[in-house]
Image 1 (tube, one colour):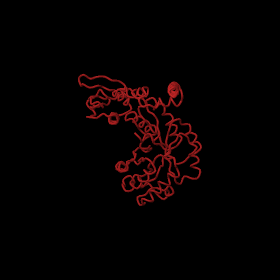
Image 2 (tube, helix red, strand yellow):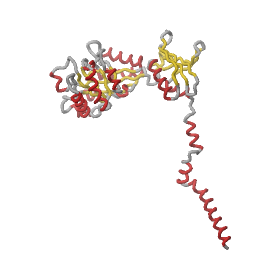
Image 3 (spheres, helix red, strand yellow):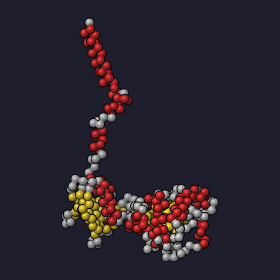
Image 4 (cartoon, helix red, strand yellow):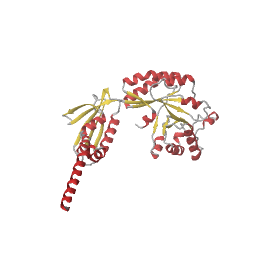
Length: 365
């Protein structure tokens, strides 16, 4: 009798296990158990699919190669690249890609001896498998790449009127407003908040022969200031304009030659997460060398100067510069005429493959 009970118990256990094997995959819990297995064939297939693109194709896509060919005489593959970036830019882009993807640059050389080619360079490299790539990179003279170049537009703000606010809000592309945060009056910041599509830059006065007693309320950074005084000016400016992305100089032709003043300026600037633009046009500026000490983003740009150019000439030159070098910036006084000029320029920028971006994007290039 006990043997019969034992046999029946075995049959019951087997029946339960069989039922579990049938029903469990159909339940949510069972499905999760199956899908969580590391050796699940579908998971393995998905992982493998991510790595099927050949390295050379990834490389071409990264550089946005327009055409490929082969030079039997030079024994090199020819990659034609879109106009709107310089050959030096493409070489740096190639170097970064190779380093990030397990390749190695052996040799790069910009070429100047071929009058039939706009810009060109040779690139010798190893792919991740150790195979040699011998490339001739050349920039097309008439074919632009997608988003071939970038252009930033910034307005230097000394006042805001209802007409200016309306005109700015009619612009359908990003732009920057350079704003001096001190001494602007009670209604200035509410008016600033009414403007759309803007990025705000702190337009800070710095040491200059042009400064006088009239500028005191604008709190310029002076050579005789202590580090603490300079830090206070920058921190209080950021407090007044919390959305500010960077600092641009106003006047400052003497300040940019004074390294200690720059060091005292860059310390709180970096702590506030801001970049720095030198608009002084001073050839003796030490901004670049000092900026490297702080690992910050800094650039020098040339704002519009009515004493040596017309508005049309300045804008046209900046636009052509974007096409040639891949990036440029237009910095204008804020008035109805300058807004109208850049509004009319938009179609020309689009035609040559130039995208309009804010200064924060510009500073990343």
